[in-house]
Image (cartoon, rainbow over all chains, first blue to last red; front, side, top):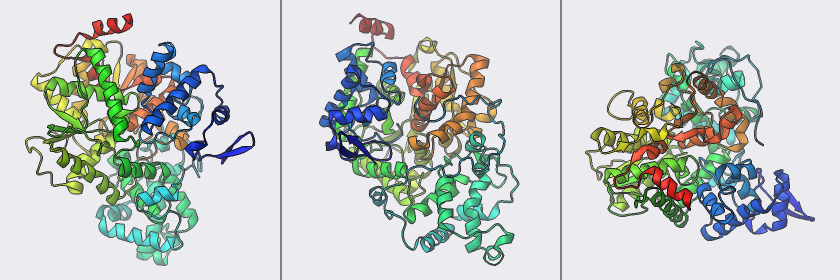
Length: 110
Length: 510
């Protein structure tokens, strides 16, 4: 199981999460997004970038509420709200956005 | 929605028996654990060469150690009382999801190797050989049971299918066939302290962030303390309460209740998880290891009491088994229940008159309550029978004006599972989860039609996540499921707080 990024293969697990986090590139994010039927725009990127920054600091994805608060600050309340996050990432800002951002899947009762 | 089936399954009645669809769910199964997940739960990484001998040895061992398991295998008389009691049977129509048929997947093998008739006349007593195909069938159908125990309520012998499911999963794990979802999570609890893998630094940052929100909303320093030695109460809550919606609103509710009650409390980063998936995989050793973390945290922090947050199976493990697994808790204050449920705590404070509410804050919603299976059928709250049904309802009614119960055959001890319990809350089983939730969703749709119910409250992290995912399939918004302490949080009047409305105005003026 692998994504094809301009001829280079990047391994992923059964659910599409990449197995080696350092394999992530912007191009790969685009490939994963296409597989998820998401057309990446500036708003998607704002979420993905925040997730990656947060992960770098804390080695885990942020709570959805923390993500939304940050997006609200940077892009305004029309975008920084739960409903809009699900419009951007229909399978949820936690799981689907993490997949595109190259982070591990959040596990547990979530 | 990209996952699962698209259509709403509106049944005529929540408990309608479907037409039989033999084989409808055959082969449906969650991802199997990889060697690294298996090893962390102390199980072989892959199917071992002598799997058949080891599986039968394990079955014999379980029969000796666990008297109930053997009695359950021996006593079924095929009366049929359980056949239409499983939500997965009602939702899928697959006859192997009838509880008796699910039990028989294992019982048939037990008879073949452990009973006189089965050894010599297997064809007469429905006994069969253990083969790799049987293992696969077990893996599939024992992961279509949420161990909710509804069927056991209706069995005249009290046979508990959950025990048989747990035994089957343990036998499978023992020979190297484990479930990725549960076993990966247990590994994270052992390594990091919780199901999410939320490390202490990230947990602290999350709690501080939430404290800021609380201060902004209330004007008060309502705290979410972490690792504070000498606190009176250790709160053990599912890590979903630090991460997911609507769980976090429940956490904020606990914090407000503790604040107003004037007690000192703390969360532990070492035991930052109430959930105990050791139960789901039937592993006493794993269940014990996870429980001992709670004991260690309580001792290290020097607390006097342990209070559990809103988590269904955690409360079963805590209420029924914690003392056996990790006791005696003689170092805690014996004046209080050990452990205590957050709803018992809140209800006590309400009765003492410590907490004041503005119920109109919840007037924008009309509520019903989903009894979580493990709380309803495997535990109790308070000091009277049925307290686990009454106390949550009492608290809801103390903070909301519009409350309506669902069909009596679908609540309290007869409650339906949310469809995601027992280790099935994984995306690879989404189709099963939607189908399994359809009886509950139908009962909900009925009270929506009759009483205009808009929201359903729950006290289990799994239920909350499951409903937020499946409710949109049945015509509800994902935030139509709420935490009970979210309702408490909405209505509570904190002494000295700028009242909710002015706080909202201030926020909107920004």
